[in-house]
Image (spheres, protein in one colour):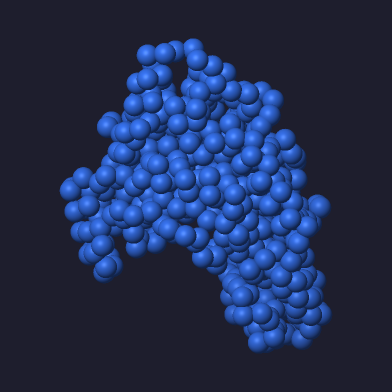
Length: 505
Ligand SMILES: [Zn+2]
């Protein structure tokens, strides 16, 4: 694949360096040209990784094939791979190099329930009816991460750079269910910097609070059955408790900060009207603009639940399923990433790719603006969503990077977002993302000043808001989530597996 960035100066530098090998530690520009060349050379392998993960389409905690594939690929690349951290079999961690500094790529590769879709088909056409699918494009994260890692390793080898580069693939991002456990297990204790990567519709980075804190918990009420007409006075209605909990929290909303978000689904709501239900359950997400506020809201919700149990004579059991701090983007690292975005630039889309994007947008009633050609300039606004990788950003100075593998306007968590993650537009975006990521990692590895200022900024932020885990100490990862659906559908889904080996060179 042809390089798409305008790197004339770097190309000259690279040509010069091949003519004069063995001049010791080279300028970062030269190292970057070596890294970018490695990424261009491996463009087909980057695409293969992303596409392979797409067809595995494994939802949270069931990323077994994906983890196995990543482990094999990373081992072949010369990385030391560990799986199973914090009791989660699908957590993948791989490292290359030794000593300091230590830079970690943090990302995820899980799919979403019922997102199965035939790539390239604008009308709804699941590959397997009812199966999960990549309707957020997390499959592309694998391509970008491995492409960048291979390139960084090539530069580390060639220039004998000290330090380590690692990747952490955390399970079940969509359920916010793994990173607080990985942090608690000390996975990031040795890291000096991290970069979070995520699919987007253009190259962008941001600093400060990037999204929302969240706590996810189930509230189970236990009561007593009775005939709804004959002896209702003997019953204790657990679903009444669920309803009263809703009512209680809704009254509370008037007295909460306007930044709060809370939403729930009723996961057990009784059997039939003439049986007083002895079991009721709701599952809540409570969020706010920062973690201490989210915790404050959550504690109020727990009190409301206790009140609902008291009112109905039922008992209540609360279980925290997951939690997330908002991502804290480090400005110094963001600026380093930004400089690399400027060097790499947005991909050059083909006329066909842009035409497809416009037709797709038209079919969804969106503005037909085609594919993005400009990077996002300036800082990104704080979003209301959450990602459990936020916890990492409060224990390691962290930069954020989005790369252009999606069509502008097509919202994630819709099956439509599963149409494009394996198309050439996505592949090009992964290559651009891998270059920015590799360039940024090299800057952090080779410029002690970047790391020192990033650390100083991080220490100041942490003094203002010290990190604490939003998980209760007894909380454990829910490794059996999504198990049933995968047991049922994996045989059908496996017919679409690519069954190819990545061969980075
Ligand atoms: Zn995501």
